[in-house]
Image (cartoon, rainbow, N blue to C red):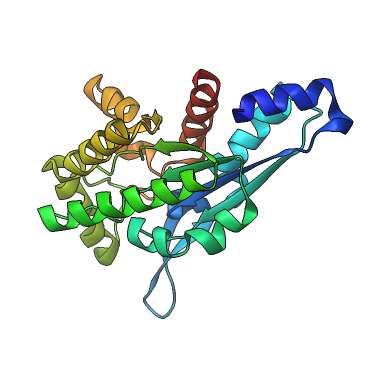
Length: 241
């Protein structure tokens, strides 16, 4: 039974059925990271604000649609994480909670400039998908947002500028497109539903939207408002399965 069906059944017979659990496995965007800043020791840190993560956005929407149904959210996003690391911690951070639905979103920290790195990324995703499905959990792969396409005038720190220059090259050079296309191909092969938010971001850019300014850190973290895009698209995908 799909998670939406489970919620609908519980909404009718609340006492006879348990609530649902949704796990989100991913990186800093999943965790709820936004702006960057320089600490006194010179290291770069991010602003953590999990209340505005897309997982909480999904929670808010489902509370509106099914107000009597308990929805348990497992936020297994970690800043700096990538798909191979997610595969390693999958059992500890996700599967032991027996989620009804597992949402996986990786790519931003995986993206490099080599075929070897792309293969490592898709192999890790394959491992995650296989292990999630073995548990009987419903599964959705969500493509991430775009990285910055240019250097925002809001970025003035030299160290943060260097990061932004690297991510812009990956975005504009087609490297990130290649990673996302590889993930889509894997999902098509394995029959994994895709919530394709990357395609929406690409369309916004094609229509003249300055997508770099939709990033809170002007590098790769969407603004709090743009995190709602993930939430709405995920709920729409849940209802379409």
